[in-house]
Structures are given as C-alpha cells and as structure tokens.
Amino acid sequence: MQQFANPRRFLRLVDAVEPWAWALTVILLAIGLYLSLIVAPQDYQQGETVRIMFVHVPAAWMALLAYLDMAVASAIAIIFRHPLADLAAKAAAPIGACFTFLALATGSLWGKPMWGTWWVWDARLTSMFVLFLLYLGYIAIWHAIDDPGRAARIAAIVALVGCINLPIIKFSVDWWNTLHQPASVFRIGGPTLHPAILTPLLVMGAAYLALFVTLHLTAIRAEIMARRLRQIELARADEV
Amino acid sequence: MDLTAPHLGFVFAAYGLSLVVLAGLVLWLTHRNRTLARALRQLEAQRAPRRRAIGEAP
Image (tube, rainbow over all chains, first blue to last red; front, top):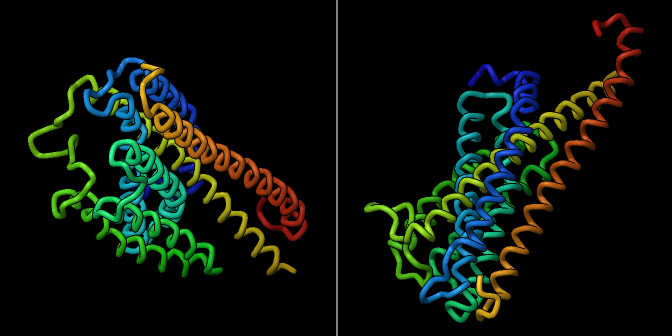
C-alpha cells in the first residue's frame, strides 16, 4: 500500500487504469439497463414498479460502500499517516452523498405507489437520512476549516464516529419493525429473489460498483492536483 | 416492459433522476479535473523560469 504513497506513482496508475475502468462501467451499465428495463419480468404484486429496485438498491449499496471506504481511508490516515489516505476519504464523500441521495429519492419514488406514502420515519429510512447528513457534515468540515491538516484530522474522526450508523442501517430492518422490507439479497440463507429479478440487480450492482471505483479514482486525482496547486501557491506567497 | 402499466411515471422518474444525478457527478468531476490540471500546468510553467533564475533544480 505504501508504494502508492507517492502521488506521481499513483497518478500514473490512475492514468493507466481509468480508460479501462470507464469502458467496463459503460459495458456493465448497458447490459444492466437492458436486463432491468427489457428482460426482467413484472413482479406479480408490484408490477412494473419493481424495476425501480434495479437503480434504488445498487445506489443504497454504494452509499454504504462509499462511507465504509471513507472510514477505512480515514483510519489509515490517522494510524499510518498515509499521505493519500485523507485525500481518498475526502474524494469519496461527494460520490457517497450522491448515491445516498439517489437511494433516498428513488426509494421515495418506489414508496409512493407501493406504500402509499413518499416518506415514513422508520428505522431504515431514518438511518439512511442520517447517513446523508453525515456525508454533508463531512464535506462541510473540509470546506469550513482552512488548514487542510486540521480539517483532515477532524473529518477523519467524524467519519470514524459515523461508522456506527452502518450496522444500524444494515440491521435496522431486523432490529425494529419497519415499513421497509427486510434484506433479500445479502442475508443468511441466501437471496430470496427469483433469478429473473436477482440477475439484473446483481449486474446493476456491478455497474454501480465499477462507476463508484472509476469516479473515486478520478476524484482522488483531482484532490492530488488541488493539494499540489495549494502547495505551489503557498510557496509563491512565501517567495513574495 | 408494459407501457400501459400503472405507476410507470414513477419508474421513469427514478431512472431519469439517477441518470441526471450520476451524469452530473461525472461532468462535475471531469470538469474539476480539467480545470485543476490546466491551472497546475500554468503555475508550474510560471515557476520553471523563476527556479532556473535562482539556481534551483528544475
């Protein structure tokens, strides 16, 4: 891991990987959308609205994964002082916030025809909303504090404390009586979904994962350049 | 897909919103990368003659 501590080496790696990552993302998205919108059958109870699941569930998975990524990178930044870890955490935040917003919004669009309401304050929806607020708070810390080192430390602590929300989100449907349905893919005993529905869901999940990885690499590169830019500007200010 | 099915508007809204948000994220990150790369190139180009003038390694 330390070999990628050198930003130049990391940027060379990103330059080499990025085109392939984009190609994989586009191919997976094309296959996923074809399976989701054309091949997948209607649900016997939900009808066509079941297709919302193919964009809602992968967005929710990526919302959790992005936060886990942010928290692990924050822990690495605090413990090992890895020079790119805080930038990796910072880069994941806006992407995770977008996926969380999509999970909430598409869930709402699914909830209205199926539950008869846009929103309920049940444990799953509320804990996802808290995740969204955690992302916004994390982003706000980076913008509010001028010293990047101090901002990184405070933001890392917030990210790690917020980690407690991840198991709450995952197990909220088991611990409390919620309107949201219980887990039907990642559960002990295996998925409960029919393969005709499960396959498009997993392909869309893979497409969203490829998109997240690609965007994250792009965002880390932007953060590295922003830090370099700041260093040059500070050096120029010192020279003057 | 049955285009006469009820609630189809919710399905299209969910896919449309996903497309808008994710495409917006891609465009924002791409634009940010390009802007930062351009600014970095300009600053480093400005620094190079000054470094040579004060005898620093390029």
